[in-house]
Image (cartoon, rainbow, N blue to C red):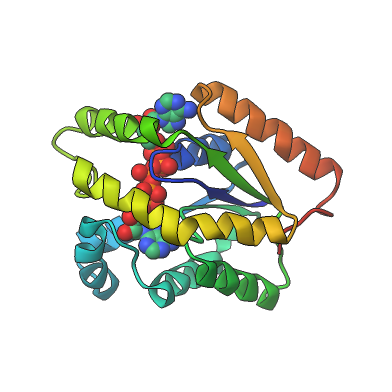
Length: 201
Ligand code: AP5
């Protein structure tokens, strides 16, 4: 299956992607993780992205579309993948659509985790406490507020883009982790039984 997980910072994309990867043996394509690895390795992409990420802004579309284009053609993606944190702008969604069309592939499901924004700061603060010593450079309150603002302006329209194509499914991300996983599993079962006829492209 080819799945997109949408949702604001702290909504549980990474948590749910990890569960799906284990259960469905799919490749996990997190642009955030890929960019953090590039920053740590000081690659040209990483050098370009470091400051942008630390501010809580988005890395340019052409850079992330290029990263995903390279990654999707790797052998472990042949049996399917989960996109976590991509696409994050309508331009990225259109880029992904072109990319998949070129490969004669389509998406099976686009899932948005809906959450109360007030809960997100607390979740990310908790994660920062738990990862003390290895805390993400963007997991401080000021940058989280900026990430949420960027989400509202630039990423929320991506859900509308997929809704317009008839392929968006919403799951309540405020439920306990296992309950969210259960809702996603049920939704994917329904998608399987309709054999991709609801694909979002
Ligand atoms: P990225 O790494 O994608 O971060 P993000 O979208 O801000 O999301 P997070 O990783 O903070 O949260 P999440 O939704 O994965 O939640 P998680 O499961 O960790 O992006 C970082 C930066 O990289 C961006 O700001 C940008 O600069 C750049 N970037 C990345 N992709 C890009 C792109 N496509 N274009 C341009 N720039 C890009 O959960 C959070 C916490 O909550 C955890 O502690 C978890 O245990 C807990 N939790 C999870 N689910 C629940 C639940 N149901 N109930 C209670 N707690 C929960």
